[in-house]
Length: 526
Image (cartoon, rainbow, N blue to C red; front, side, top):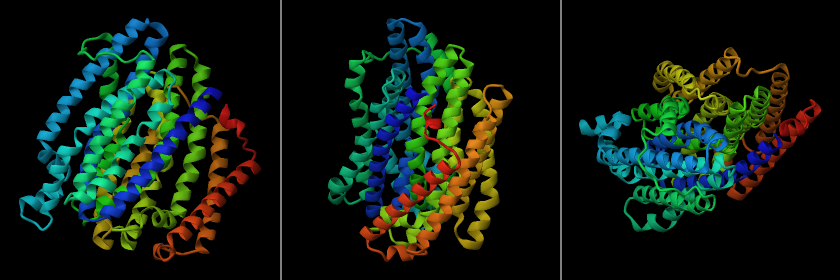
């Protein structure tokens, strides 16, 4: 457990740097585009290849590749490992290349499919027809990002199986730097700032791909790709990967459905959802992704060695750590939503109205944070046992639940209050609870892993500490300002200082309560 804890810290630290740069990137985007028509179009064009990236690369591929590669490292020769890697890279690379070409050629069809509201405006000659035309054009620029980031994910998965977690975690920084650079240097030179941002996404994908080459070469893992559809290892990977394409990307599929429905809502809906989603992704990326990244190879290794006790201890560690971080992060972001939006985004084209609307969707989105984070840790327990079908089944149920929640929540909220996008965000959170519940129940019923009484007692302490922290931060926040407009009246430096003080106070209260309740740091080190 100590080694896992150190690996988790390394990955979390590097991911923290990446997420900080990601927030800086979003600050530049908010300043440049605000939360109107241009922002809606860019976020749409960026979300489609990012969704496919999660399917082909980070989620589904890693969950299928890491257990098989770990098994080869434990039981096969170096030559057999390289053969597997060569065939995997070649096969996946060719498939994703073809998908990329088709996506660029059919960008208008994809835009019509996932932005039906915009297509209908264009088809009927409506006032917002330009959204469809511009989104179709931007997709042609952003879609090649999918090819480069998929190969980057393959490289990262190989480095992870070799115990090198730092490089893959740092790699996303280059995407953020590329987009920031294009905001500063390219956007002023072109008529449409969206084009500059799309070019930045493409450049970022290429740089990330090239960055990992030296590290693969140093480990002797830089191989020449070749087609290997019928290679035994590739067949096993694709058998695991095909169902995992759905199972591990449930939250992303739900977000994509939300994007499609948001195209029917008022201008700005996609942007409000984007900004709240980006804040949601910050703790997910730092904590949940870091923990799930280091836990999957460890679970795969103890599973290969039939170490049931090691499997349970590793899962206990992951569940306790992710909830220790996830529950207070959820309540803290709800309590501090106004100062967070003021400090991060309120400048340039992003004003008080945009921040107020974003704060509503942030509450709804972040309410499912701990469930999403918990699911990220539970799914590796299935993947390590080469069971990717069960998460798929639960993912389907979760998606259907999301659609049902949308029907129940979105249109009534839109009709009565004009804030239908809040229903979209809340539906995603509720679907995350459904998915987490099913994953926990599935592990227990399969006698794979169950939450023991000590773990449940530990979580109760975390919930109690988080609630006391939430109450303390809310009271302190009200001494400064009550709403978004009040925080907007503060100078940026003053708002930043107040926000930092509130975060520090919340952390101290939370830590003190846990210590009083008997929680000790050594419990998280194993």
